[in-house]
Image (cartoon, rainbow, N blue to C red):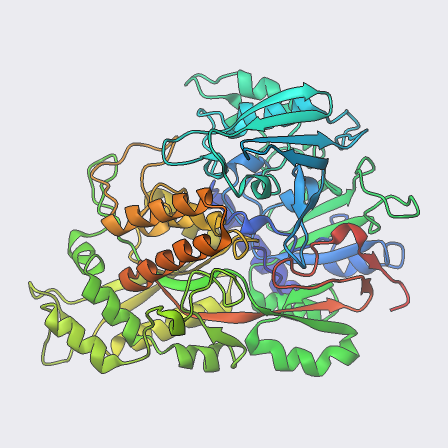
Length: 621
């Protein structure tokens, strides 16, 4: 999921960017995704020539470029190694199929068609004729086989996307073979309902450029691929197959893209797409700065948060932009504890054992759930522009289990929270501070990313709500790349205010398996051993985590929709009972887009730019 942001005065911006550049180089992290969600086309670009933002809107380039922003710079140009939601891949790559941003239905992309055998275990894709890479080289079935067989399914390459291809509970994967120059066949060990949808997220990579790095090894025996296409690589050397290609990258400032002359799409009249020639993705961490930049006319779009909705609505006519409302956002907003009881390579526990006892106590988690005033969050932080969230699925999902259907909910009740704690053996001292069984004061740190003001505001209110039941919480506000490293690598955190979502997960629940699977690469509340990492010891998954694993596996093998709804209903009940995370508020999906950007088809699912290839920029507006 990409975010669009704002900026203050040019001098302040330059100072901030220099400081951000220093910090970024200090924390050069290869950190996670978000997946994917991440990579949806909700964040677009603009063209820049290394000059100031005001110079971007010169008459010479007006009408041929789109100027957007993201809250953080890319962590890598190597797609399989990417674990951050802030990336360039949506613009320079495609998969075999794509998702319609309005309906979620699957549509042809690099593959013009696909066929599924009657036993649902063989899928044959036929590539479009005449496909080319951005360097003009042919794109063939060899590239598809190379991408899946030599990269995604290569155990020596630690990629989170391998999880998408794991089938069943026996750690089996599909096989792929070339039938001819335009056809490839995937064979599955058993029926796997989400497979075709997954091919929309697994982009195809160029064999002619990357094969040598996969077969060559470094001094430690690792593929050279692991050190290939970092952000220090010249952008022009990155070969893609999407609508744009990179031409310039200035760390902590911007990424510049240019239309890919070899992109396969054209309109009904035969005109090549995309229509917009250049895109510039400005890197601006602060949402306040993003807002200022948009209001000054320097950005073509910005995500509209609830706290600025009324301001932007009043200015929309004068500012010549439209605020699109896609309804409730997809994904989940939550707070959760680190339930990990394992130790790192040096034998040190990831979580202080004293705190770990609290976090792994169900009554403690339930008490915290009752202590959170989510109505106040909705009204104060989101200005009423949202809905309380109770489930891993949005209310629009066909798999959503409502409270009326039996889903357990936690209405604000601090007195009930206190009683749960007392019944569990906690106690209060004369200052009404909460103490555990051994007299330790209950206090911990809440981790939250700095780039999203509403999320920081949530953390502040959670701190306040917890103080009402005697719990002391401190805030740790860090850049998202650093947050991801703590969540999924060092695992040294107590409590986290976060969000997770993958485009299309409301239509295919298995897309959430990365987060909910006990072995998933995004199972952050109890992150287990991961390929390519130093070994950890004493990691254990709870029985209810294993039960969730089994339900997801049953759901992916079940083709009857009614039975699938029952399976995922049980999953939602387990989450509500066990509370690995507590869901907060689901805000509305709002985005402001300049009126000169035409043919916008906005939705919460696809955002404003899922159909980037057919967008146009009018000079008249």
